[in-house]
Image 1 (cartoon, rainbow, N blue to C red):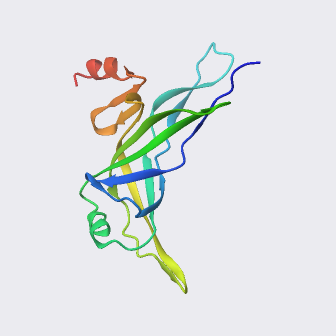
Image 2: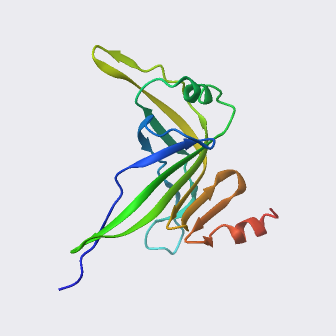
Length: 173
């Protein structure tokens, strides 16, 4: 029988512009990378296919567990990019228990899309959710780059391989 192991990623800390917000965020939804595909059909082809043509807009959300004036102020100006970092510990388990712990760091840069006012309910803590449009994202596991996308610089790397290098060269960038 093969060795079974599984990963668990169950908690994190959020940093905004370098400041730790430990205990302030309840949930972070990182951007989904959605590939744009364009239909391609031509005479002589027996079918139609879709080919990669770019990356769709990326968005992220942070759900706050209360009002924090300093944090909310950062999300008030929609013209200023914020640098967000989400840090976590990836734990690997096997038949003998936890076998490894590796750092996971997610970097995103983006501009606020809203200024949340929250909701008030009797005996419940106020919750507010900030939304961001994302122009940069990078994920590292154990200090190794998994994916990096920089929309403004035409950078798209997967496992350290620069997928857009030839494209940038072709357009003279």
